[in-house]
Image 1: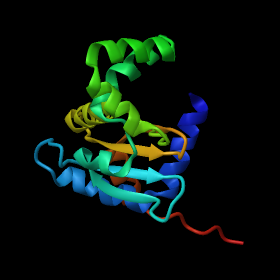
Image 2: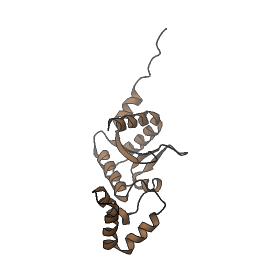
Image 3: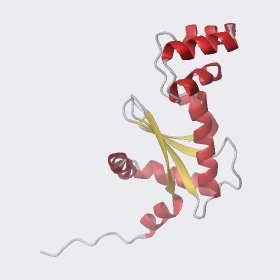
Image 4: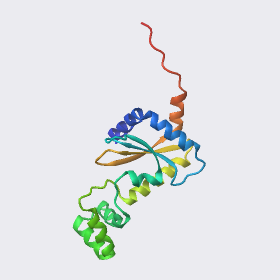
Length: 167
């Protein structure tokens, strides 16, 4: 956990300008909605930071559709792949089978449930005092999300520049 926290802190320093832009947008919003500002960061690709609406995260992160959520939930509960597949096939039939076929050859990083969790996390951050910004990081092999205080960014902006040391 400490390693992940350190990696997140490093991201905050690397993407400081985008964080400020996203925080300013979030602070200007009167109420939370799926259009609420979030910041999406990527470890690779041409766009490494992007201010997005929470509801649009699914457009930018490859994810499983809702028809596979029950399978993912079972797997996360420790049910084996074959048993989870059989249960979902029996319960959901063709809907599950079609979603499973569409998945073949793809390697989505998050489930539909995960996208919903990001929205809930954003709501929690929005309701905090001081307000917190949702930051979602696509590492390429996994996705993590965390909240950053907008007050922290505001304090850093107001801090006087460090004076150079005299020789």
